[in-house]
Length: 485
Ligand SMILES: [Ca+2]
Ligand SMILES: [Ca+2]
Ligand SMILES: [Ca+2]
Ligand SMILES: [Ca+2]
Image 1 (tube, helix red, strand yellow):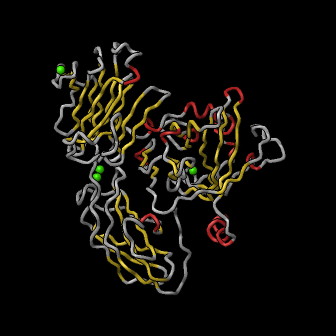
Image 2 (cartoon, protein in one colour):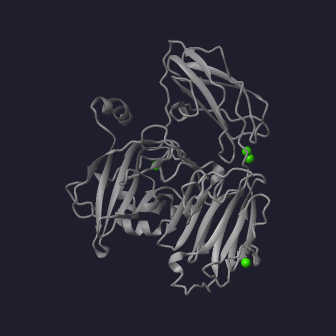
Image 3 (cartoon, rainbow, N blue to C red):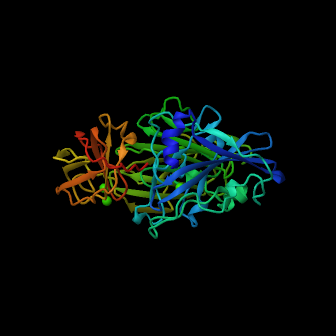
């Protein structure tokens, strides 16, 4: 019923999406925490259940300025429900200056800071969350403030619905697959009872999610600063230098005041690219450190070597006296040995070569399945469409892929409208590459549709879009369509 209300009736009434805001004051630290609770009528993830409450919170300091933003997620630690990640406010993507952007995972509705495929514990069961780049206007929900009456931790009258003891949806029917409708906001433990403690135990987002798969992650914990440029042009620099001419796409630079760590993340690494990392004494540390660092400094690098299908973890422990003109340089590429070239006196000539103290290579499959090029239809009856195509593989046209994603839409499907197309269910399991696949979509409403497929491998990499076929589904027996979003 809620789905009908949300998708059909609410727009007729001119109502927008609503989030419920709860203000929690932590008098002892002069902090104000604003929680935004989002209700989704369905959670069609591996733990399918109705009634899904999700949350993000913003933490304001004594002056009312936002300092942190925390997003609830599952994460690598148990229990799932208390997971999430946090960013300092400055590091969160925003619309304008006051609206942090939430990328909502398909199915689970976990909230993320970046569009990405997030692999979760027990990943061999296929547990991933994926969030997609903006393809349309983001939704800015209308805020419905919960009246401030204490902190609701005791669920006193008269405003009791956040404390409802029952489930926000039906009881699950299939053990382990279907679950009971989600619990009320005030029944979600620490998130509600002690938002500051929940915040404190969350990992920073740059550590939680961005040191694996195809991302380059370079971090330093010392009064040292980092920059990264694409070679051969040294003008393209992230970090301490001007960012005006950066050509490295999709990067972030974190200067975390809590941990004293600086991190550069390149979200999209391309093969055959050479990066040059430069490590220099942090300008504001020059006086504090008396122009020298005597303590060991740690530099950490995760580098996806796409040519070798490996991810390299390199950790450098540096014990040198670091003068104001000292630089350390790492050339990061498939051909590099990743040694740290120390120029102690700034004359441009390397004086010491430091090998990583920890060096590990892990094999990773970076090859997505090939795009299907021969999708076609076979004669179909009312309410159904029979499709046939040649199975691609896990790696291009070799091996066996993991899953198909078949969608239909009322206009020709393209890369940019793919996410808006209707997902289908009861998808066939891919056969070995080269096999003729035949699959019938049932419960397709009558009308003209465009259908396309993308194939997914065991690293949850998507193939390109298949060719797009047009079908006309005749009127006849009308079966209800199953939507999965
Ligand atoms: Ca959920
Ligand atoms: Ca030198
Ligand atoms: Ca693959
Ligand atoms: Ca594979």
